[in-house]
Image 1 (cartoon, rainbow, N blue to C red):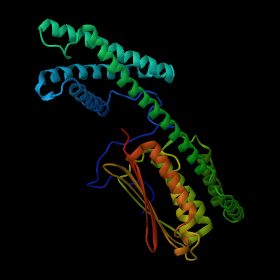
Image 2 (cartoon, rainbow, N blue to C red; image 1 turned 45 degrees about the vertical axis):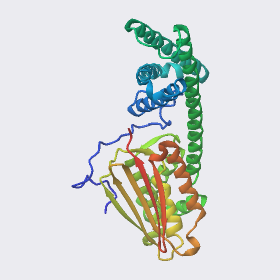
Image 3 (cartoon, helix red, strand yellow; image 1 turned 90 degrees about the vertical axis):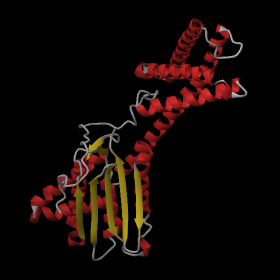
Image 4 (cartoon, one colour; image 1 turned 90 degrees about the horizontal axis):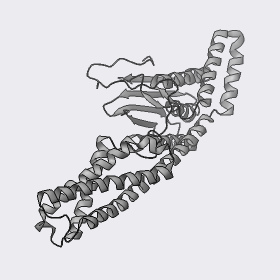
Length: 369
């Protein structure tokens, strides 16, 4: 099969094409200290946490909470309105707060939570007085009611902002480690690979100058990818082109020993993915599955767009038991798995399989939101 991208076959899952503009940069969410609390998942999390807090407060106030269901309903209304209002305030001002640095963002964010709590508590008390209803807390006057709510908001808001800070620091560390792993992959152009390429090009200059020129261009593309911004996103088309250029260089040296079988179906050519993802896996397949075999072998490369995201697979033969646990192969897979985990979390997966004859690596990348 030609390595070009196929059109979606009949019955394939139709998904919108994800694109990455030239020079797009990966930065782990949007790099802001405060998370985006405007999304559906974040809103549901706020509501769930607020409801858990409501039950704790209600049980702490009444020994038999099931006999004070009216108070529970009123407390639920107050806390949920306060939580949603504070989350909306942080969502609308997250860019302005994050631009002031983590310390000021924390202090101003906490001040916003307290101000929201004071306003909603005052409004709730006035509403209760106007309707002649019971107070939220037994024996509490207005000042005590508001102060209690502010104290609870201070504790909960402080813990939430501390969690956001720790989460932000962890994300920065994972991104730094991801860039370090990518830098290691970019430096993986082995010296003997370069020497082999140069010797091959020198041998082709006189006899086949056109192939020699094409080999120089392919080698230049590999070096250009190794020197690019580590955070840069590429399209599936670009990653496939780079992989083909690498295989063309190796085929000049290995000849008929290197055979490649492409199986590409319903693959969106504009899908955005981290750079140097497929090519290192194919390079490992050549190095550990083809080079040690006198007769060579076939590398199988599969790519498919699925309902859950993009699926990639690389499979190569094993020469024998001595080559089944090649350290270089494990290192590259671990580097790629670490990068995927840092970028996509648990949504992306890298799985390896090995049997008596074949070694297989599968990668699944989720569709962008």
